[in-house]
Each structure stands twice: as C-alpha cells, then as structure tokens.
Length: 516
Ligand SMILES: Cc1cc2nc3c(=O)[nH]c(=O)nc-3n(C[C@H](O)[C@H](O)[C@H](O)COP(=O)(O)OP(=O)(O)OC[C@H]3O[C@@H](n4cnc5c(N)ncnc54)[C@H](O)[C@@H]3O)c2cc1C
Ligand SMILES: *[C@@H]1O[C@H](CO)[C@@H](O)[C@H](O)[C@H]1NC(C)=O
Ligand SMILES: *[C@@H]1O[C@H](CO)[C@@H](O)[C@H](O)[C@H]1NC(C)=O
Ligand SMILES: *[C@@H]1O[C@H](CO)[C@@H](O)[C@H](O)[C@H]1NC(C)=O
Image (cartoon, rainbow, N blue to C red; front, top):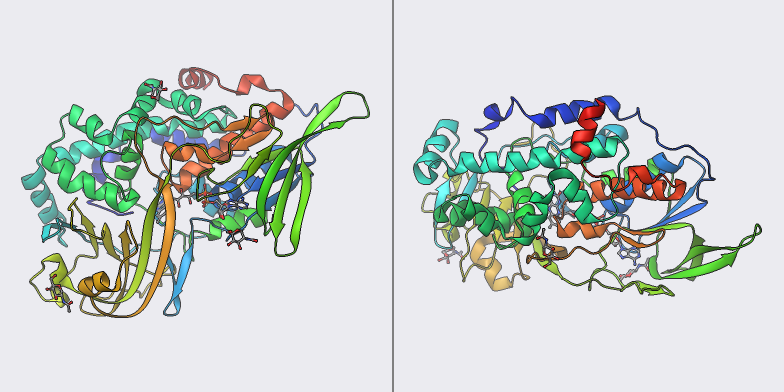
C-alpha cells in the first residue's frame, strides 16, 4: 500500500474523537477481566491457520480462558500466511501484506507486547501513470505538491481525507466495545454496532457510487482514487465503498511496518500464547457426540489432519477456522453437521502477482524523458488503461532498515516490487526493466474479489465452531483479521460461560458513554 500527500495531518490533530478512544483503550487494556468462572474452562481448542488471524486468536483465547486450556494451531503452509518475505540479494523483502495504519490499535499493541519495533520509514514520492506518461509527479517540496494538487483537483483531495476520517472515527468505536468485553455473532452486527446502517449500506454500494453521490469529480476518481484501489487491492472503484475507504486510509501519513518483517508478529503471538503449532493440513472436521458420566451427551469436534508424518485426528471442545473457506484457499470437509457447513462459501479471491525485480528500471517505459538519475519518483501507481499489464511499480526497502540506509536512485540497480493481475512474461519484463540479475515471483490469492452487494458468510458455523475470515468481505487487512480474532475469542468465552449480556448488544456507543 502507499503513502500519499501528507499536508492535512496538521488539521487532523485536533478534535478527533478517536483520541478519546485511544486513550481509553491504552488506560483500560489490562483492567476489565470478564467472567464469573462458574464452569470449568474448555480442555482443548483447535485453530486452523497460523496467519495473523489464527495467531491473534491464539493470543486472545489464552487471555480469555487462562493458562490451563490446550491450544493447538494447525498450519499446512508457512506461519504468517499472507504475511511473508522473500530473501533477495542478502536481504528480506515483504511480498504480501506490507503496511499498517497508525490507528490499527491491535497491531500496535501486538508489537508492544512482543517487544518488536516499527521499521524506520523512508519517504517515498508518488507518480501517477496513465499508460503513456506520468500525469502527476510528487515533488520534494510540500508547498509545490500542495499547489499542484489544488490546481489539478481543487478541494477534492482535502474532502477525501475528511470523508475517510469521518468513517475512521466511527470504526474506532470497535476498540472501545472490545475493551468492555462486548462481542458480536455476525459481521453485520459487528458493523451495525459502530455506525448503525451506514457501513452496511457501504457494503452494498460501490465506492464510485458513494463518492460521486457526495460530489467528488470524475477526474479525481480516475486519476487519484482508481490508482489507490489498484495498488492496494488490485481492483477498481467498483469495489464496495467500505473497503474503498479502508484503501483510501492507506494514503494517510504515519503508515508503518514491523522491523524484521510483519510475519514476526504471527510467530511471536504463537510463542507467547504457548500454543502448540502442528505443521499439518486439516482435512476434515466432524461433529461427534459423546455420553458424559453425569448423564446426557456432549458434542465435540473431531479434527482430522495430514502431515508429513501421516494422517491423524484429535477431539476438541472449540474450533476456530482462521483461513478463508473459499475455492483455492482451503479444502476442509465438514461432516455430520445439520444444517451442513459448506466446504466453500460463494465468491472468489483476486489473483495478485507480486514480482520482485533486482535491476534497472526503464524510465522511458513510463514516458519519462529526463535521465534516470534525475527521476525521484519511487512509487508508480496507475490509472485504468487497457494495454497496461502492471498495476503498480514501487521501489522496495528491505524489512530491516539501518539509520544509514538510503534508497538508491533510479539510475542504479534497485529492488522493485511490481503488482500485476497475471504473471509477467519475459517480454513484458524486458520493456519495464533495462536489465536485472534476479527475480522472485509470488502468486497470491490475495483478497476477495469485491463486487457489491455481497452477503457475509456466518462467523458461527455451529455451536462452538467459529469462522474468522468472513470479515474479509467487508475489507481484507491485517487489522481486520485481528479485530475478528478478538471478537471471536470474546464471543466463544461468553458462549462458554453463558454471558449473554455481552453478546449482540444494541446502542453500545451511547451506553458506554453513559457508563463513563
Ligand atoms: C499482496 C498483498 C498485499 C497486501 N497488503 C496489505 C497491507 O499493506 N496491509 C494490510 O493490512 N493487509 C494487506 N494485505 C491483506 C493481509 O495480508 C491479509 O488480510 C491478512 O494477512 C490475512 O490474514 P489471515 O490470518 O486472516 O489469513 P492468512 O494469512 O491467509 O492465513 C491463513 C492460513 O491458513 C492456512 N491454511 C489454510 N487452510 C488450511 C488447512 N486446511 N489446514 C491448515 N492450515 C490451513 C494457510 O496456509 C495460511 O497460512 C495484503 C495481502 C496481499 C496478498
Ligand atoms: C445488502 O444487500 C444484501 C444482498 O443483496 C441484502 O441481503 C441486505 O439486506 C442489504 N443490506 C442493506 C443494509 O441494504
Ligand atoms: C498442505 O497442503 C499443501 C497444498 O496441497 C501442500 O503444498 C503442503 O505441503 C501441505 N502441508 C503439509 C504439512 O502437509
Ligand atoms: C524502454 O521503454 C521504451 C518505451 O516503452 C521502449 O521504446 C524501449 O525499447 C525500452 N527500452 C528497452 C531497453 O527495452
């Protein structure tokens, strides 16, 4: 994702309701323990997937259920999932999820708890490519950018930041609710709690519709908003308006990443939660009924899995699926459930190919006539254009940045990250680069292909069988997975102990204000 202009940050500083939320969150975060412990805690919990969602679930479940419960995390690929790095010329580079918003409070809390650091950010300069030339180039000078933007887009840019901020203010309410222990049994209810129908309506309309309705210009939609959607989600302004707003928030200042690589958060959370990592693919989850000594029956979940050591299975009280239940993303058979749980929900994931190239950029490809040594743009985003094979080309810093680090100029060999909707051919690469010495390609089924209106999958698949990744259909981001993890850990806890007054409560915003 990218950082765009930074000139409204001064204006954002005052009167922001999220500051109140933030200070409350920080002050209270260890305060409110939930639950009268009337019942025994569960014995065993399974989590399927060790991406940020699964790892965060392990950490939040440990907090909710205490030290006794056994937590097993199944991972058939790599810990980190869509957070991953490639080793390249002696250094590591992010190939998947890369930047984190300054108001992503769970991610912030994780790195603080784990003793990780934020990577030093190196300023970048944006260029907007229309398929022939750069229609806009950010300069080194704040005031020049300001005038250029005002000249070309009038007040659209400032208004966009205000529009996004108003949405973010309401979104920040979720942290307060979670701090007070409130949880929700569906994605719709979770979002309804923050902004009543406002967000639910945004899921059903396109970003284009939502922004045109309030008067943003067509030129601004094409030249600014479209490239931001393309670089962040590989898609267009036809995505739902909410994920569009999340994507626009990715132009705020203060974006950060984890020193050493974002995936360190996942391994760190697993380690600190004392979860057992089982390197295996879960193949089936079956509902089993067992008699209990006191009479009656109890239902348990039998998780079958296959690893290099062969096939096996275990019984669990609770199971969390922290991987998308979508074609190409997982293959889990759900057995004996009535109503049945499908292997895949409707909708598909978008292919985004991330190609890292260590080489020399052909600046003429972008219609630049000046010599490469004078070309200071480090991040090229693009408008929609039929013949364009790439969505963005950005100079990429390694995951560890020393204080002496300087990004090499475009006249020297450099690591570039190219996003495209299909793998790039040798021919295509030869047009974009003058030469290269190494290439690393990752094909991601990256995030949902957003085409509103879309119904959310359930997050409670059966009594104590939970599903995290339904939330990605609102917006896919690390913080969204962390919010879903916190919500499901709370929900599972409240279900287990029968604390119904902490589930699906209405009007939380005014009620919590009343309690203050
Ligand atoms: C190219 C790209 C760029 C992105 N940029 C950003 C960004 O800048 N900022 C941001 O916040 N987000 C970004 N995202 C989105 C972000 O990476 C994801 O939303 C987030 O990482 C999802 O985490 P998750 O744990 O929910 O899922 P995943 O990371 O997909 O984890 C699921 C895990 O489950 C495992 N699994 C699946 N099925 C099974 C099974 N049957 N048995 C065992 N294990 C199984 C998988 O191997 C995987 O490791 C980006 C994503 C991509 C691909
Ligand atoms: C959004 O669209 C879905 C699917 O068409 C529909 O079920 C839902 O009621 C709509 N929600 C709102 C708030 O309009
Ligand atoms: C899990 O399944 C994937 C895809 O089939 C495979 O590449 C991987 O090796 C499997 N992992 C394990 C631990 O068996
Ligand atoms: C660089 O790009 C220009 C413009 O697309 C093209 O004409 C030229 O052949 C490219 N250079 C190389 C060495 O491929």
